[in-house]
Image (tube, rainbow over all chains, first blue to last red; front, side, top):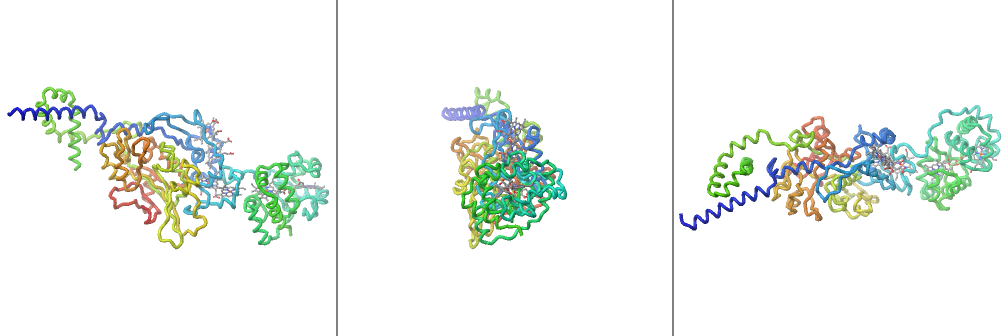
Length: 345
Length: 285
């Protein structure tokens, strides 16, 4: 063979061998193991520590919250609708900080070294799913936030772990009073609260048809001094718990049917924020909830006076204090006129 | 085609296994090349032996040959709360900005008198303004005053195609399809050429400028191989996202496919996607 041909062949062979050697050293050992890729990458990707732990994880420590939640409107697995803990509180796990895209099987976990977020702006949170928005299917319950809540936090009224039950609404009393017995204990009251419990300009507010639970709660508050009034304090102080229940049962059994408001009143009240009041005090000032008072039959002066007392904090109540603080005098006037318009027939 | 690939693969494997031999050949080059031709001739036999028991990655409690994952989206249920998008970002450490998403949600709104739907996603400036931050996502109530004829949300994510175009174009074997059907990226091998980003007909891939690599949805491969649901499915409050194993006839996805008339996006692209949709219009592509 000519010399130059031998050299060429030799060179080719050397290059070939170098290529094979280079490939051996440079290509990962797991390449081609399962296919045309680095087989070890599968393990690396799969080893990452999951962050979301699931609701079962919370149960071992927060069983109270989980049991409250599991009975709530936010846990409806039959319909496939479940708002899990970590949707509102964020993931309970994390992954150890790595240079980006390097995978890690380790990480911090709540409660050891990871604190869960507690949502503070619940309007922002709940609106994500409940604000009336184009595109949201109608089976999802939606609200027009301005009308439903105004600027209030949703958790002022809704329990976040059981949004179908309301904060501040009182449970029905275990032992209801005896209205007949109550009738014999109220003679002194009528001077101030009106015959039949309808105030009609007297200093005391209308009691006829008022919710029993509310009457019991508020009389008890007069008695303990939580609610303060120079006229009512001594009267309530003299009542026994049984008296309070009987009297409450009696007044709530009296009738106060509301008369309708005019369209102008309704519009003015709506502007002043009455659509929010409706949530708790009912459509015509007749609350459907036993814990929230009816406003029907109250005088304008009484309503203005109470709202000012709530605004100033003299009468403590989380919901009403927050609401009244946000009202200006004109709003108070409009709302009071509106509710006073529902006089007892 | 398949056979050809197999031959190539075997050839290399054989070379690797005869490491000492190859080193020896370095000394006597001609003998080496002869030997290589000889090993090449032995190939077909070796190929059959390897096919009998394909290797399986040693993941604890998980055999990838036993699963066939698939994903369902019921757009009639989606409420556009974007919890999936935020959960995905957290679970997968996707950059916390409004430009990189492994999964996203589109909104299609047809106003009265208009021919075509207006389309926006959580990355739309109006929606970013409504959320107040690029790290948080919400759909602005932007059509509140308009007469809306029709509107719906469509969650999107990687289709984990049976014939993924993105894998075909990768020049370095950095992206591949696992035996259980997930297309993943080996970020240590990715050279950031972005061919795959271009190749994907669904825009499911994006480029991470900071790291210089492409990235994509993996259906949370690290979760599903541990028996968990992908993070987006885990947090969906209305069951609009369905995930499971098609090999298990009782799994949510098998039930979903059995009980619904489903469709896939851009079937004409030939990628054979594995995300199945219910309740979308022809405008959704």
